[in-house]
Image (cartoon, rainbow, N blue to C red; front, side, top):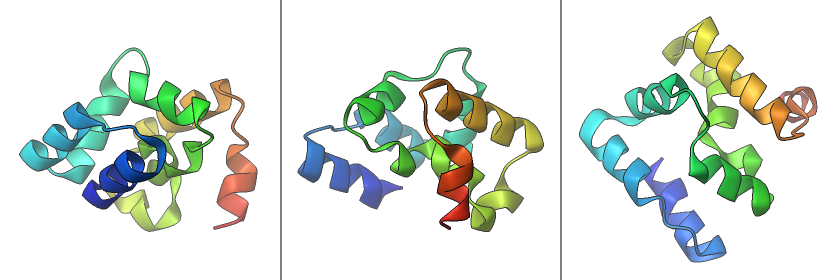
Length: 97
């Protein structure tokens, strides 16, 4: 997750400082669950949408099969809904994985 933060800063001039701090303080899965537990999507998700990078979002990672044991069905439902609400084709994304 920290490598993705570094890549965003380098490639799209977006530095997710608060998310990085959450990962450092709580670990990656707990940071993701905190984001998913908020009532509204974070500004970072909107930023990634504007930049065409939703496939690299926390929400997209939560839906990946390899991370399934780390997240609940509720976490995955929220992640899917948030991405779908932004017009992201979740099924096509998961089919490519």
